Length: 246
Image (cartoon, rainbow, N blue to C red; front, side, top):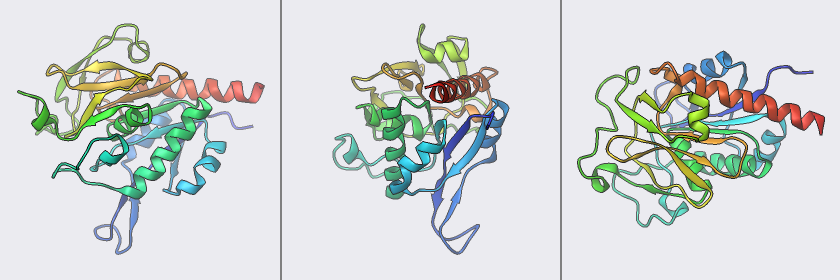
C-alpha cells in the first residue's frame, strides 16, 4: 500500500522553440521539491481534459501551478480581453476540468498564482484583467527584483484556513502577476490582501481544503511558505486515509 499521498501538479505548456522544436511541457523543479519536503509524492499531469476524472481517481490532491498566461475572461463574464491578456486555452480547459472535478469530490486543492485565479473562477469569482488599469497607486505586482526575494507583504485574514496553515497573520511574499481576483465569489472568502488592497489569497467556504495564494510559496521566500505546502499535503494524506476507510 502506498504510504505517501500522491499529489498531481499541473504543467505549463510551451510552443516549439528553446528546449524542443516540438510543443513541450515545463515546470520548475521547486514546485516538486516543495511537495517532497511536505511529505508528498508529486506527479506531473499532462493536459488531457478528457482524462481529468481518470487522473482524479488516482491522485490524493491537486496543485494548480502558475504560468505566464491568463484565464479567458469569457469564463467569468469579464468582457473583452485586455490587450495584455495572453491565453493558453488547452491548459486552462484541462486545469478547469481538474479543479471542478476535485471540488466535486472534496479533494484538497492548492492553487498558486494563476492557479489561485483559476480556483477563484471555479468558485464563482471574477478577475481584474490588468491591475494597473484598475487599482490606483498599486504596487509593482510584477516585482522588478528576483522572484527569490519578497516583493511586498500580505495581511492574512484571522481565522481563515490560510491563517491556520501558515500560523501567522502577516507574510512577506514574492509577486509575479498582472491580474488578480476581483471578487472571490459566493463560495469563497478573501484570506490575504496586499497593502494596496489587491486580493492575494482566497479559499472555499464549503470544502475541506481548497486554498489559493497569489504568490509562489514553492520559492520559500518567507519562513512560513513551506507551512502552506505542509498543510496542503497533510490534508491530502487525511483525505486519502478517509477514502480508504470508507
